[in-house]
Image (cartoon, rainbow over all chains, first blue to last red; front, side, top):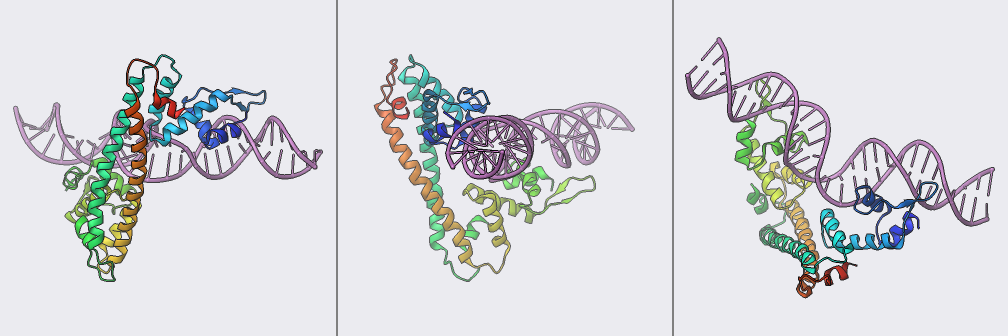
Length: 127
Length: 127
DNA sequence: GCTCAACCTTCCAGTTTATGGAAAGATAGC
DNA sequence: GCTATCTTTCCATAAACTGGAAGGTTGAGC
């Protein structure tokens, strides 16, 4: 399986697939006689796994850990839960932060006339 | 006013202040005879303005624009409002995205036993 | 006047997670 | 055999800084 077929199945750009093996996130695939990377179904499954984890905002380093757990038959679900809970707390923190930004900015936008005059509460607030 | 005093007043790291003039976000400060950067109160006010805008998640390019408006006596508040509304919509989009991540991940975390056994709905979901 | 710490300078490299492109070799279809 | 479409490697770029090295400046204390 050439890289473009593997990338397609995994739902990732070719460049990204190459990049993931470059940084050692997935093991280097075998090569054909002419040097083309050759992917097997197990590697493709790992790529899919990584794509999904990335979509959940897990960092590349988180993915390394998750992949280790994914491949470890003897992992405890507690280890996985710990990583996920961590990520969940990050998400909640970001949500709180965004909420506060949202509230302030939306108040400012609402009370700005948005007309031709220079008067602007948004600028005044930042000033 | 040396760079560290200016940085302190603006609430920014020295490195960042230097960086902002390097990329032309603020005009290059004058120099003392020995080459030290010398900041005046007006520059410090601009740095504060930038810090606040950055805290609101405006990009450096947004800041360039906002700074232009900040310095323009004849700006229309509509121009400022447009930038801010834009940013507000970005914030809302990010909020929706995070909410959906949060819900899925929190369901998964809740139904994971988090014990010594390998069984794990989180891994199963990503798989 | 000397010393020493705490400044300041520039320059280079690294962070994170890719993405874009150039130059050159491989393969498949006609 | 030609041509289009792969593939390879290598280098550059993105955003917004941050860290560190090597070396010059300043001011306080003695």
